[in-house]
Length: 332
Image 1: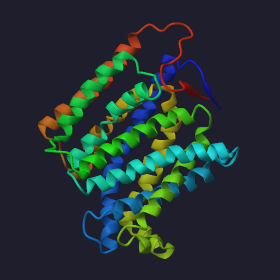
Image 2: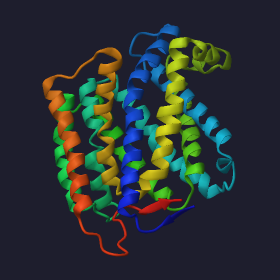
Image 3: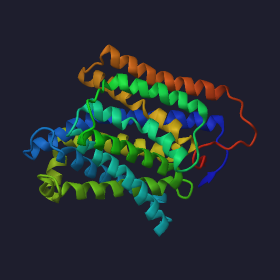
C-alpha cells in the first residue's frame, strides 16, 4: 500500500539507485528504438525518417507491456475503480502526448535541438512545482539544475537560430514530460503502482495507435495480420522484446514504485543521466563515440547529480521531517 510518510535517507538512496537503473534502461532503449523504427518504415515501404515507424512501435510496445504486466502481477487486476482509471488515464495521456510530440518535433528540427529542449524538463519541473503547486524544491537542487542544464547544452551541441515549429514542439514535449513526472508523484498518493503502471501503458498504446491512423501507412500497419508480420521480423521483434521487458515494464515499473520517495526535481535531475547512458551504449554497441565537448557536458550532468547527492547525504535531518516532494510516499 502507498502511504505518505517520512522518506528516510536509506529509502532515498534505494530510490536513487532504482531510478538510475530505470534511466540506464531508457538510455539503452534509444538504440533499440531507432533500429526497430527504421525497420518498420522499411517493411512498410516508407521513406527513412517517417513518423509511422517510431509511433507504431510505441503503440505495440506499450500494448504488449500492459498485457505482460497484467498477466504477471495479479494485484494489477484487482481493486480497479473509476477513480483509478481516471488517474492512470491522466498520467498516461501526459506521457503519450509527450512521446508523440517528441517524434513529430524530431521530423522538423535537428536531433540535438530536440534532445536539448526535451531535457529542459530539469527547468520546467521545479518551475511548475513552484508556480502551480506552491511546493518549491529544496534550494540545493537549483544548483544541480543549473549545472545539469549547462551540461545538456554542451552534450547536445544545440544552437538554434530561432524558434520554429520543430523547436516549439520540442519545448511542448518537455512541458508534457514534466507534467507526467509530477503526475506520477500525485497519483501515487492515492493508488497502487501495480495498477497505475499497466493503466498508463494501455493509455499510451491507445493514444499512439489513434495517432497512427493519421499517418501514411498507419491503417495498414495496425491491421492484426500486418502487425504480426512486422513483429515477426527479427530486426523488429528482437528490439521490441528488449524495449517491452527493460525499457517499459522494467524502467516504468521502477519509476512507479520509487519516484514518489524523491522530490520531483531530484528525479528530473537523475533522469538527465539518460543521454549519458544512451551515448555510452551507442558507443559500445555501434561504435558511435562522443566529441570532447559532449563528453564534458556528460561530465557536468554526472557532477551535478553527485554534488546534490553528497550535500543531501551530509545535511542533518530533523526527526519526523517530511520530504519536500509531492506526496513523499513510500511504497511497501
